[in-house]
Length: 204
Image (tube, rainbow, N blue to C red; front, side, top):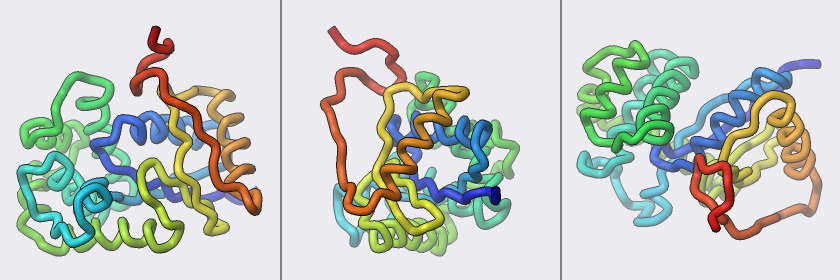
């Protein structure tokens, strides 16, 4: 069976997308699936599509633009390394996505130390982020993250998980999510969230 390429859209600030990304990394290990990362800006959803992605004080903007440049220079593998490094510091750790944390994440990912400066100095990195965001919004009417797009072109929001399953449990969740995503006429399943990302136990 040929490897299936799955496009996974994320905003690095979203802790729910981070758990789903960790799950998809497990899926790559236990199923014949390859992740292709796509950038999505929650600022463009929650504020305005006219936001030019130039506000350096916004937590997500330098990170998104650095990820765009990392992908341009080093491909998907570089995006994966930088996203992993950012997530380890701000979602698995107790860091805040400020400039110091972002620079430290770049170093953790073994990427050039001037990556963030170059990304913010190059206006085309904002255009790259916007293009990928709009690709998801127009292609599958994505409205948030995580959004997954299959090779067939079918897209689905989620799954939203508090803790990423591992091993065969990750594969089984993938089998079911993929089946639902391909099922014609299926649109939504949802229940209330009773815990925060990373929490194993339900809130009392």
